[in-house]
Image 1 (cartoon, helix red, strand yellow):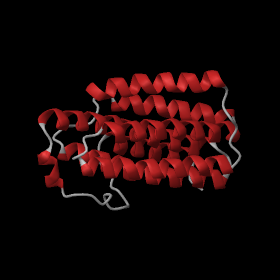
Image 2 (cartoon, one colour):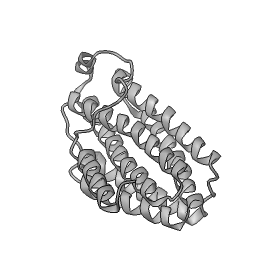
Image 3 (cartoon, rainbow, N blue to C red):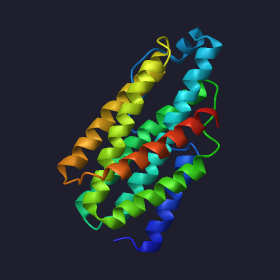
Length: 211
């Protein structure tokens, strides 16, 4: 079993990879048109699609932080494995959104280190309260992310098939993660906590759209 020092070094390395765009996907980019189809977007459409994908990239940076922190906080090996498996799939999302941002000629949020640190702290806090609350945090997070992605599918340019393919696959994965957490004994979070999560998400997404 790895020591706490080894685990800390590993978590720092993963964090640096998450915010440094060096994560490699384990799955292929979702099927869609070729990268060249992006040239059919008007300039306003390109900028809007890129801004939305930057928001999604930030979400995946946060997802890496949340799941890794929750994996560290739990004392149940089966839950640690569940969080780690979810983080691996979220890493695919991170790599895909980074690739699509590059194709659209834009970069990630300049505030990614801040988003990662804040999400990691939240994940640790939820995990320290207890596994049922930590799982409940996953369920509510994925529920809100699902709604957020549905909004993006409505807002993305119809011609941007590559971004839409990524968002659609992300949405399917998030629904599955939430359902899995629910099946493991998640506790429903209080209304004020859900409201605070929505408010924090709105601040993050509104900022990441531009920065």
